[in-house]
Image 1 (cartoon, helix red, strand yellow):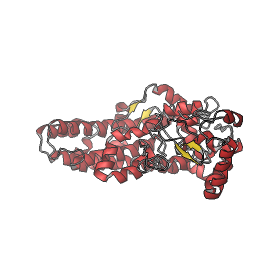
Image 2: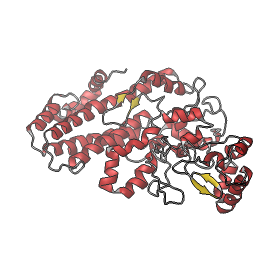
Image 3: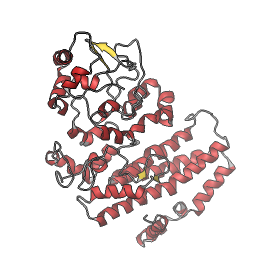
Image 4: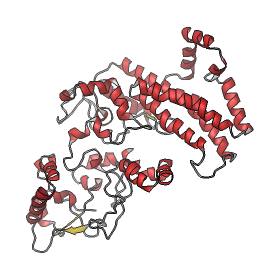
Length: 442
Protein backbone atom coordinates (compact mmCIF):
# COMPACT_ATOMS: atom_id res chain seq x y z
CA UNK A 1 0.00 0.00 0.00
CA UNK A 2 1.18 3.48 -0.73
CA UNK A 3 2.92 5.26 2.09
CA UNK A 4 1.04 8.40 3.16
CA UNK A 5 3.30 10.82 4.98
CA UNK A 6 1.33 12.88 7.43
CA UNK A 7 3.49 15.76 8.55
CA UNK A 8 6.38 17.58 6.99
CA UNK A 9 9.02 16.48 9.52
CA UNK A 10 7.99 12.85 9.10
CA UNK A 11 8.34 13.27 5.37
CA UNK A 12 11.97 14.26 5.89
CA UNK A 13 12.79 10.86 7.40
CA UNK A 14 10.51 8.55 5.39
CA UNK A 15 11.14 9.43 1.77
CA UNK A 16 12.77 6.54 -0.11
CA UNK A 17 10.84 7.66 -3.19
CA UNK A 18 12.95 10.74 -3.93
CA UNK A 19 15.95 11.05 -6.16
CA UNK A 20 19.32 10.96 -4.40
CA UNK A 21 20.17 14.38 -3.01
CA UNK A 22 16.61 15.66 -3.35
CA UNK A 23 14.65 16.80 -0.30
CA UNK A 24 10.92 16.72 0.32
CA UNK A 25 10.90 20.49 0.17
CA UNK A 26 12.40 20.32 -3.30
CA UNK A 27 9.75 17.86 -4.45
CA UNK A 28 6.85 19.74 -2.87
CA UNK A 29 8.12 23.04 -4.17
CA UNK A 30 8.39 21.52 -7.61
CA UNK A 31 4.81 20.22 -7.49
CA UNK A 32 3.46 23.60 -6.46
CA UNK A 33 5.55 25.69 -8.82
CA UNK A 34 4.80 23.55 -11.84
CA UNK A 35 1.09 23.00 -11.27
CA UNK A 36 0.55 26.63 -10.39
CA UNK A 37 1.78 27.43 -13.90
CA UNK A 38 0.60 24.43 -15.94
CA UNK A 39 -2.78 23.73 -14.30
CA UNK A 40 -3.75 26.84 -12.34
CA UNK A 41 -7.34 25.70 -11.79
CA UNK A 42 -6.15 22.52 -10.10
CA UNK A 43 -3.68 24.50 -8.02
CA UNK A 44 -6.32 27.00 -6.87
CA UNK A 45 -8.72 24.20 -5.96
CA UNK A 46 -6.08 22.63 -3.74
CA UNK A 47 -4.75 25.92 -2.35
CA UNK A 48 -8.17 27.05 -1.10
CA UNK A 49 -9.28 23.62 0.11
CA UNK A 50 -9.19 22.24 3.64
CA UNK A 51 -6.17 20.23 2.52
CA UNK A 52 -4.32 23.31 1.34
CA UNK A 53 -5.24 25.34 4.39
CA UNK A 54 -3.93 22.53 6.63
CA UNK A 55 -0.71 21.96 4.69
CA UNK A 56 -1.74 18.59 3.28
CA UNK A 57 0.51 18.56 0.25
CA UNK A 58 0.58 16.80 -3.11
CA UNK A 59 2.93 14.00 -2.05
CA UNK A 60 0.87 13.14 1.01
CA UNK A 61 -1.87 11.90 -1.31
CA UNK A 62 0.03 11.00 -4.48
CA UNK A 63 3.26 9.51 -3.10
CA UNK A 64 3.69 5.84 -4.02
CA UNK A 65 5.74 2.95 -2.68
CA UNK A 66 8.20 0.86 -4.64
CA UNK A 67 6.25 -2.10 -6.02
CA UNK A 68 2.92 -0.29 -6.42
CA UNK A 69 1.67 -1.36 -9.84
CA UNK A 70 0.53 2.15 -10.72
CA UNK A 71 3.67 3.93 -9.47
CA UNK A 72 5.84 5.93 -11.85
CA UNK A 73 8.73 8.38 -11.57
CA UNK A 74 7.78 11.99 -12.14
CA UNK A 75 10.05 14.98 -11.68
CA UNK A 76 12.26 13.15 -9.19
CA UNK A 77 9.53 11.53 -7.06
CA UNK A 78 7.73 8.19 -7.20
CA UNK A 79 4.03 8.97 -7.43
CA UNK A 80 0.69 7.57 -8.56
CA UNK A 81 -2.06 9.45 -10.37
CA UNK A 82 -4.74 7.35 -8.71
CA UNK A 83 -5.68 8.25 -5.13
CA UNK A 84 -7.75 5.47 -3.60
CA UNK A 85 -9.81 5.06 -0.41
CA UNK A 86 -6.82 3.27 1.10
CA UNK A 87 -4.83 6.47 0.67
CA UNK A 88 -7.58 8.64 2.11
CA UNK A 89 -7.93 6.21 5.02
CA UNK A 90 -4.56 7.29 6.40
CA UNK A 91 -6.34 10.39 7.71
CA UNK A 92 -10.02 9.52 7.23
CA UNK A 93 -10.08 5.93 8.45
CA UNK A 94 -13.66 5.78 9.74
CA UNK A 95 -15.08 7.43 6.63
CA UNK A 96 -13.15 4.98 4.44
CA UNK A 97 -14.39 2.01 6.46
CA UNK A 98 -18.02 3.11 6.24
CA UNK A 99 -17.72 3.74 2.52
CA UNK A 100 -16.18 0.32 1.91
CA UNK A 101 -19.18 -1.31 3.63
CA UNK A 102 -21.79 0.72 1.75
CA UNK A 103 -23.86 0.16 -1.39
CA UNK A 104 -21.68 2.71 -3.13
CA UNK A 105 -18.61 0.49 -2.81
CA UNK A 106 -20.39 -2.36 -4.61
CA UNK A 107 -21.52 -0.25 -7.56
CA UNK A 108 -18.61 -1.41 -9.70
CA UNK A 109 -19.92 -4.95 -9.52
CA UNK A 110 -22.43 -3.89 -12.19
CA UNK A 111 -19.82 -5.38 -14.54
CA UNK A 112 -21.44 -8.77 -13.81
CA UNK A 113 -25.07 -7.62 -14.23
CA UNK A 114 -27.57 -7.35 -17.06
CA UNK A 115 -27.02 -3.58 -17.07
CA UNK A 116 -23.42 -4.16 -18.17
CA UNK A 117 -24.51 -6.82 -20.66
CA UNK A 118 -26.82 -4.30 -22.32
CA UNK A 119 -24.17 -1.61 -22.41
CA UNK A 120 -21.25 -3.73 -23.59
CA UNK A 121 -23.01 -6.09 -26.00
CA UNK A 122 -26.25 -4.49 -27.15
CA UNK A 123 -24.80 -0.99 -27.09
CA UNK A 124 -21.04 -1.34 -27.41
CA UNK A 125 -17.95 -1.00 -25.24
CA UNK A 126 -17.51 2.77 -25.75
CA UNK A 127 -21.03 3.28 -24.41
CA UNK A 128 -20.27 1.18 -21.35
CA UNK A 129 -16.96 2.94 -20.66
CA UNK A 130 -18.18 6.51 -21.07
CA UNK A 131 -21.66 5.80 -19.74
CA UNK A 132 -22.27 3.11 -17.13
CA UNK A 133 -18.73 2.83 -15.80
CA UNK A 134 -18.39 6.57 -15.36
CA UNK A 135 -20.95 6.39 -12.55
CA UNK A 136 -20.65 2.84 -11.28
CA UNK A 137 -16.89 2.56 -11.58
CA UNK A 138 -14.76 0.03 -13.39
CA UNK A 139 -11.71 -2.11 -12.84
CA UNK A 140 -8.72 0.19 -13.25
CA UNK A 141 -6.39 -1.48 -15.75
CA UNK A 142 -2.62 -1.00 -15.58
CA UNK A 143 -0.85 -0.19 -18.85
CA UNK A 144 2.93 -0.34 -18.38
CA UNK A 145 3.42 1.59 -21.61
CA UNK A 146 1.27 4.52 -20.49
CA UNK A 147 3.03 7.60 -19.06
CA UNK A 148 1.04 7.27 -15.83
CA UNK A 149 0.57 3.46 -15.92
CA UNK A 150 -3.23 3.76 -16.34
CA UNK A 151 -5.06 2.36 -19.35
CA UNK A 152 -7.14 4.98 -21.15
CA UNK A 153 -10.22 2.75 -21.24
CA UNK A 154 -10.32 2.75 -17.45
CA UNK A 155 -8.93 6.22 -16.74
CA UNK A 156 -10.22 8.80 -16.14
CA UNK A 157 -12.83 7.20 -13.91
CA UNK A 158 -14.33 8.50 -10.67
CA UNK A 159 -17.12 5.95 -10.45
CA UNK A 160 -18.38 5.46 -6.93
CA UNK A 161 -17.61 1.72 -6.97
CA UNK A 162 -14.31 1.86 -8.84
CA UNK A 163 -12.17 -1.27 -8.39
CA UNK A 164 -8.66 -0.02 -7.65
CA UNK A 165 -5.30 -1.75 -8.17
CA UNK A 166 -4.62 -1.80 -4.42
CA UNK A 167 -7.76 -3.86 -3.78
CA UNK A 168 -9.89 -1.01 -2.47
CA UNK A 169 -13.34 -0.20 -3.81
CA UNK A 170 -14.63 3.26 -4.53
CA UNK A 171 -13.54 6.78 -5.31
CA UNK A 172 -13.87 9.45 -2.63
CA UNK A 173 -13.69 12.15 -5.30
CA UNK A 174 -16.97 10.89 -6.77
CA UNK A 175 -18.65 13.05 -4.13
CA UNK A 176 -15.76 15.24 -2.94
CA UNK A 177 -14.50 16.43 -6.31
CA UNK A 178 -10.76 16.83 -6.68
CA UNK A 179 -8.89 18.90 -5.75
CA UNK A 180 -11.13 20.99 -3.54
CA UNK A 181 -12.65 17.94 -1.78
CA UNK A 182 -15.44 20.15 -0.49
CA UNK A 183 -17.82 18.92 2.20
CA UNK A 184 -20.27 21.66 1.20
CA UNK A 185 -20.32 20.37 -2.36
CA UNK A 186 -21.03 16.81 -1.21
CA UNK A 187 -23.99 18.09 0.82
CA UNK A 188 -25.78 19.46 -2.23
CA UNK A 189 -28.17 17.41 -4.40
CA UNK A 190 -26.40 18.41 -7.62
CA UNK A 191 -23.48 16.20 -6.57
CA UNK A 192 -25.69 13.13 -6.27
CA UNK A 193 -27.38 14.09 -9.53
CA UNK A 194 -24.35 13.03 -11.57
CA UNK A 195 -25.52 9.44 -11.23
CA UNK A 196 -28.93 9.39 -9.57
CA UNK A 197 -31.07 10.63 -12.45
CA UNK A 198 -32.55 9.42 -15.71
CA UNK A 199 -35.26 6.96 -16.78
CA UNK A 200 -34.46 4.14 -14.35
CA UNK A 201 -33.46 5.98 -11.16
CA UNK A 202 -34.48 9.66 -11.39
CA UNK A 203 -33.84 10.57 -7.76
CA UNK A 204 -32.56 14.03 -8.65
CA UNK A 205 -35.66 14.86 -10.70
CA UNK A 206 -37.87 13.33 -8.01
CA UNK A 207 -36.15 15.42 -5.34
CA UNK A 208 -36.59 18.59 -7.38
CA UNK A 209 -40.33 17.90 -7.66
CA UNK A 210 -40.80 17.11 -3.98
CA UNK A 211 -41.58 19.62 -1.24
CA UNK A 212 -38.08 19.01 0.10
CA UNK A 213 -36.48 19.97 -3.21
CA UNK A 214 -38.67 23.03 -3.63
CA UNK A 215 -37.72 24.19 -0.14
CA UNK A 216 -34.01 23.65 -0.83
CA UNK A 217 -33.88 25.48 -4.15
CA UNK A 218 -35.84 28.43 -2.78
CA UNK A 219 -33.72 28.69 0.38
CA UNK A 220 -30.26 27.50 -0.71
CA UNK A 221 -28.58 30.61 0.67
CA UNK A 222 -29.88 29.77 4.14
CA UNK A 223 -28.62 26.16 4.20
CA UNK A 224 -25.33 27.02 5.96
CA UNK A 225 -23.58 24.47 3.76
CA UNK A 226 -20.06 25.28 4.95
CA UNK A 227 -20.86 24.72 8.64
CA UNK A 228 -18.92 22.23 10.71
CA UNK A 229 -20.73 20.47 12.25
CA UNK A 230 -23.78 20.47 9.98
CA UNK A 231 -26.65 19.12 12.07
CA UNK A 232 -30.19 19.18 10.70
CA UNK A 233 -32.54 21.24 12.85
CA UNK A 234 -29.59 22.94 14.55
CA UNK A 235 -27.21 24.36 11.95
CA UNK A 236 -29.86 24.49 9.20
CA UNK A 237 -33.59 23.89 9.05
CA UNK A 238 -35.04 25.17 5.77
CA UNK A 239 -34.82 21.85 3.89
CA UNK A 240 -33.07 18.49 3.75
CA UNK A 241 -30.76 17.47 0.92
CA UNK A 242 -29.83 13.95 -0.19
CA UNK A 243 -26.94 14.03 2.25
CA UNK A 244 -29.21 15.16 5.09
CA UNK A 245 -31.41 12.10 4.85
CA UNK A 246 -28.85 9.47 3.94
CA UNK A 247 -25.55 10.56 5.49
CA UNK A 248 -25.41 13.72 7.56
CA UNK A 249 -25.60 14.23 11.30
CA UNK A 250 -28.71 14.63 13.41
CA UNK A 251 -28.92 15.48 17.10
CA UNK A 252 -28.77 11.72 17.83
CA UNK A 253 -26.76 10.29 14.94
CA UNK A 254 -23.32 11.11 13.66
CA UNK A 255 -22.27 11.50 10.05
CA UNK A 256 -22.14 8.20 8.15
CA UNK A 257 -20.62 7.35 4.78
CA UNK A 258 -22.64 4.13 4.64
CA UNK A 259 -25.62 5.27 2.58
CA UNK A 260 -27.62 2.16 3.45
CA UNK A 261 -27.89 2.72 7.19
CA UNK A 262 -31.21 4.58 6.81
CA UNK A 263 -32.84 2.61 3.96
CA UNK A 264 -35.46 0.01 4.90
CA UNK A 265 -36.57 -1.12 1.40
CA UNK A 266 -34.41 -2.06 -1.54
CA UNK A 267 -36.21 -0.55 -4.52
CA UNK A 268 -33.66 -1.67 -7.11
CA UNK A 269 -34.64 -5.30 -7.97
CA UNK A 270 -37.74 -6.50 -9.86
CA UNK A 271 -39.50 -7.23 -6.56
CA UNK A 272 -38.72 -4.97 -3.60
CA UNK A 273 -37.90 -6.52 -0.25
CA UNK A 274 -37.06 -5.30 3.21
CA UNK A 275 -33.36 -5.12 3.94
CA UNK A 276 -31.71 -6.82 6.89
CA UNK A 277 -32.40 -5.02 10.15
CA UNK A 278 -34.89 -2.85 8.28
CA UNK A 279 -36.80 -1.74 11.37
CA UNK A 280 -33.67 -0.13 12.83
CA UNK A 281 -32.80 1.42 9.48
CA UNK A 282 -36.28 2.89 9.26
CA UNK A 283 -35.90 4.30 12.74
CA UNK A 284 -32.57 5.83 11.69
CA UNK A 285 -34.32 7.64 8.84
CA UNK A 286 -37.28 8.59 11.05
CA UNK A 287 -34.82 10.25 13.40
CA UNK A 288 -33.81 12.54 10.53
CA UNK A 289 -37.44 13.30 9.75
CA UNK A 290 -38.19 14.20 13.37
CA UNK A 291 -36.00 17.29 13.06
CA UNK A 292 -38.96 18.85 11.23
CA UNK A 293 -41.94 16.44 11.40
CA UNK A 294 -44.15 14.84 14.03
CA UNK A 295 -44.08 11.03 14.32
CA UNK A 296 -47.67 10.77 13.07
CA UNK A 297 -46.61 12.54 9.86
CA UNK A 298 -43.65 10.17 9.47
CA UNK A 299 -45.78 7.07 10.05
CA UNK A 300 -48.26 8.32 7.46
CA UNK A 301 -45.51 8.73 4.90
CA UNK A 302 -44.23 5.21 5.46
CA UNK A 303 -47.78 3.82 5.26
CA UNK A 304 -48.14 5.44 1.83
CA UNK A 305 -44.70 4.26 0.69
CA UNK A 306 -45.34 0.69 1.84
CA UNK A 307 -48.67 0.75 0.00
CA UNK A 308 -47.02 1.66 -3.31
CA UNK A 309 -44.27 -0.92 -2.87
CA UNK A 310 -46.74 -3.69 -2.03
CA UNK A 311 -49.01 -2.60 -4.88
CA UNK A 312 -46.22 -2.78 -7.44
CA UNK A 313 -44.91 -6.09 -6.08
CA UNK A 314 -48.24 -7.90 -5.84
CA UNK A 315 -50.16 -6.48 -8.78
CA UNK A 316 -47.44 -6.23 -11.41
CA UNK A 317 -43.94 -7.44 -10.51
CA UNK A 318 -44.71 -10.89 -9.13
CA UNK A 319 -47.16 -11.86 -11.92
CA UNK A 320 -44.84 -10.53 -14.65
CA UNK A 321 -41.91 -12.39 -13.12
CA UNK A 322 -43.93 -15.62 -12.93
CA UNK A 323 -44.91 -15.32 -16.60
CA UNK A 324 -41.29 -14.71 -17.61
CA UNK A 325 -40.23 -17.74 -15.58
CA UNK A 326 -42.69 -19.97 -17.47
CA UNK A 327 -41.46 -18.59 -20.80
CA UNK A 328 -37.81 -19.16 -19.87
CA UNK A 329 -38.32 -22.65 -18.42
CA UNK A 330 -40.33 -23.83 -21.43
CA UNK A 331 -37.82 -22.28 -23.86
CA UNK A 332 -40.52 -20.79 -26.06
CA UNK A 333 -38.50 -17.71 -27.02
CA UNK A 334 -37.13 -17.94 -30.54
CA UNK A 335 -33.73 -16.31 -29.97
CA UNK A 336 -31.34 -17.73 -27.35
CA UNK A 337 -29.37 -14.57 -26.53
CA UNK A 338 -30.49 -12.37 -23.64
CA UNK A 339 -32.37 -9.25 -24.81
CA UNK A 340 -32.71 -10.62 -28.33
CA UNK A 341 -36.49 -11.00 -27.85
CA UNK A 342 -38.85 -8.06 -27.60
CA UNK A 343 -40.63 -9.33 -24.49
CA UNK A 344 -37.35 -9.20 -22.57
CA UNK A 345 -37.10 -5.46 -23.27
CA UNK A 346 -40.73 -4.92 -22.33
CA UNK A 347 -40.29 -6.78 -19.04
CA UNK A 348 -37.00 -4.97 -18.32
CA UNK A 349 -38.57 -1.52 -18.71
CA UNK A 350 -41.61 -2.60 -16.67
CA UNK A 351 -39.58 -3.08 -13.50
CA UNK A 352 -36.17 -1.52 -14.19
CA UNK A 353 -37.51 1.80 -15.47
CA UNK A 354 -41.21 2.34 -14.77
CA UNK A 355 -41.44 0.31 -11.57
CA UNK A 356 -38.38 1.94 -10.06
CA UNK A 357 -39.71 5.40 -10.87
CA UNK A 358 -42.97 4.67 -9.07
CA UNK A 359 -41.26 3.27 -6.00
CA UNK A 360 -38.63 6.00 -5.78
CA UNK A 361 -41.30 8.64 -6.35
CA UNK A 362 -43.28 7.36 -3.38
CA UNK A 363 -40.17 7.06 -1.22
CA UNK A 364 -39.25 10.71 -1.81
CA UNK A 365 -42.80 12.16 -1.90
CA UNK A 366 -42.97 13.10 -5.59
CA UNK A 367 -46.56 12.53 -6.79
CA UNK A 368 -45.94 12.95 -10.52
CA UNK A 369 -43.21 10.29 -10.53
CA UNK A 370 -45.30 8.00 -8.34
CA UNK A 371 -48.24 8.08 -10.75
CA UNK A 372 -47.75 9.54 -14.25
CA UNK A 373 -44.09 8.54 -14.66
CA UNK A 374 -44.61 5.49 -12.45
CA UNK A 375 -47.67 3.31 -11.85
CA UNK A 376 -49.48 4.75 -14.90
CA UNK A 377 -46.63 3.65 -17.17
CA UNK A 378 -46.34 0.33 -15.32
CA UNK A 379 -50.03 -0.44 -15.81
CA UNK A 380 -50.06 0.55 -19.49
CA UNK A 381 -46.96 -1.57 -20.13
CA UNK A 382 -48.32 -4.54 -18.18
CA UNK A 383 -51.80 -4.71 -19.72
CA UNK A 384 -51.19 -3.53 -23.27
CA UNK A 385 -47.58 -4.49 -24.03
CA UNK A 386 -46.32 -7.23 -21.72
CA UNK A 387 -49.40 -9.48 -21.54
CA UNK A 388 -50.08 -9.32 -25.32
CA UNK A 389 -46.40 -10.09 -26.00
CA UNK A 390 -46.59 -13.09 -23.66
CA UNK A 391 -49.74 -14.40 -25.38
CA UNK A 392 -48.00 -14.28 -28.76
CA UNK A 393 -46.10 -17.45 -27.77
CA UNK A 394 -49.44 -19.35 -27.73
CA UNK A 395 -48.18 -21.45 -24.85
CA UNK A 396 -51.02 -23.08 -22.87
CA UNK A 397 -49.32 -22.60 -19.49
CA UNK A 398 -48.71 -18.90 -20.14
CA UNK A 399 -52.27 -18.37 -21.38
CA UNK A 400 -53.73 -20.25 -18.41
CA UNK A 401 -51.73 -18.17 -15.94
CA UNK A 402 -52.86 -14.90 -17.55
CA UNK A 403 -56.51 -16.00 -17.78
CA UNK A 404 -56.56 -16.99 -14.12
CA UNK A 405 -54.85 -13.75 -13.07
CA UNK A 406 -57.33 -11.50 -14.90
CA UNK A 407 -60.41 -13.48 -13.86
CA UNK A 408 -59.71 -14.25 -10.22
CA UNK A 409 -57.27 -11.68 -8.80
CA UNK A 410 -59.35 -8.78 -7.37
CA UNK A 411 -56.69 -6.29 -8.41
CA UNK A 412 -57.22 -7.14 -12.08
CA UNK A 413 -60.96 -7.76 -12.19
CA UNK A 414 -61.61 -4.14 -13.16
CA UNK A 415 -61.00 -5.25 -16.76
CA UNK A 416 -64.32 -7.13 -16.67
CA UNK A 417 -66.41 -4.56 -14.74
CA UNK A 418 -68.47 -1.78 -16.41
CA UNK A 419 -67.10 1.73 -15.90
CA UNK A 420 -70.09 3.08 -13.95
CA UNK A 421 -69.96 0.17 -11.52
CA UNK A 422 -66.28 0.83 -10.90
CA UNK A 423 -66.87 4.54 -10.34
CA UNK A 424 -69.57 3.73 -7.77
CA UNK A 425 -67.19 1.33 -5.99
CA UNK A 426 -64.59 4.10 -5.79
CA UNK A 427 -67.14 6.58 -4.42
CA UNK A 428 -68.33 4.07 -1.81
CA UNK A 429 -64.77 3.36 -0.70
CA UNK A 430 -64.93 -0.32 -1.60
CA UNK A 431 -61.73 -0.43 -3.63
CA UNK A 432 -59.78 1.46 -0.98
CA UNK A 433 -60.92 -1.05 1.65
CA UNK A 434 -59.75 -3.87 -0.58
CA UNK A 435 -56.30 -2.34 -0.87
CA UNK A 436 -56.01 -1.77 2.88
CA UNK A 437 -56.70 -5.47 3.34
CA UNK A 438 -54.15 -6.45 0.73
CA UNK A 439 -51.41 -4.15 1.91
CA UNK A 440 -51.47 -3.70 5.70
CA UNK A 441 -48.94 -1.35 7.22
CA UNK A 442 -45.98 -3.18 8.79
